[in-house]
Length: 117
Image (cartoon, rainbow, N blue to C red; front, side, top):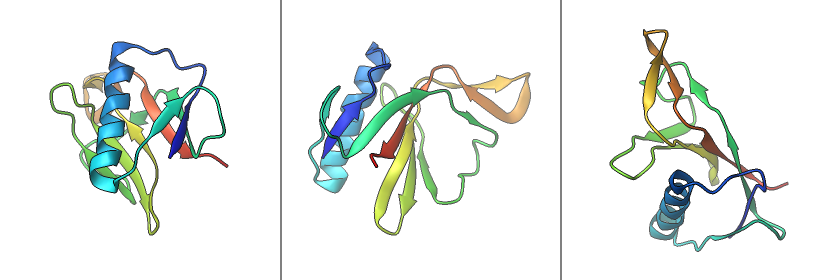
């Protein structure tokens, strides 16, 4: 699968770790090689955007959440009957907003994965 990295994405260490995690996950679970570049006609486009999740305990309908462990970023995957159609890769830790629970916001942006149209 060919993936395009949005040109506005700045390649930080966290992003490199997340991209490697994405490559390894797709290879292991989907037997799919990912070719990530900033050019070409991709099957999937990776962008970065802030993501706020009001309730981090319960998963949104149709999504699967995998918490982070060590250097492995957490992953929120969108699913459909045809498989994963998009998802969010969390970078960083959850922090409480205004001290209220369970309202959370990310310390860092996340990948926004969407199928290229």
